[in-house]
Length: 230
Image (cartoon, rainbow, N blue to C red; front, side):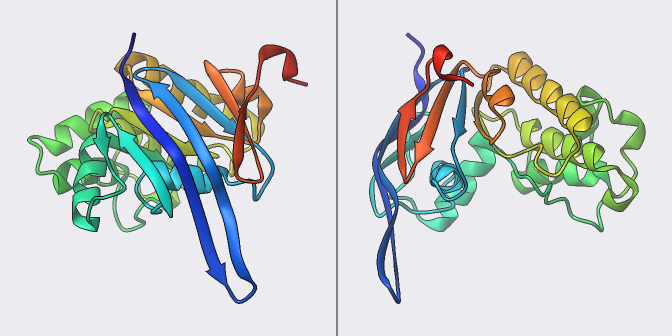
């Protein structure tokens, strides 16, 4: 049996505002084995992105345990979390989050440089070549299309060879054809690297590409079987 790369145990996230407490996540349990793919679907406000943020250590749970590759995150300091993310996770956002003053090559090499890995530019060139952007490596984000920017974001996420990729609506800002090409690239990288993949999406078609799907409703999760897709 494959060892789990993501484990959430009884995760609760509760926020307190002027109107009282709001329960964002209510007892989330999930396990993702190494190298497997998981889609999380559900309506806006159901807690999908908060779940991903908890996995990434970017949101602290009110209670419960978070383990990535066997390491518990919820009791780490911010500096420890940053170092752990750098070594073990790749994160892909809907809005690309590329640095406008850096070329595609420099954006891709950035996590390697932060981690003080050897030959960061050489490895970044290889990552850009893997997503079909070797010829665009010296272009700035403003000179790239939306699909090209997202492929740079994919190269940056995979360049450190992380144990898990967390992707939050990675095609949300792209047209259908471009989004399809980006997803083909994402799953090809997943297969080539054996990386665990968690995909947050509204698209049931994309969810079907994953080995397992969870639906989130009001901060809780349920498994979706093949016969439940519409």
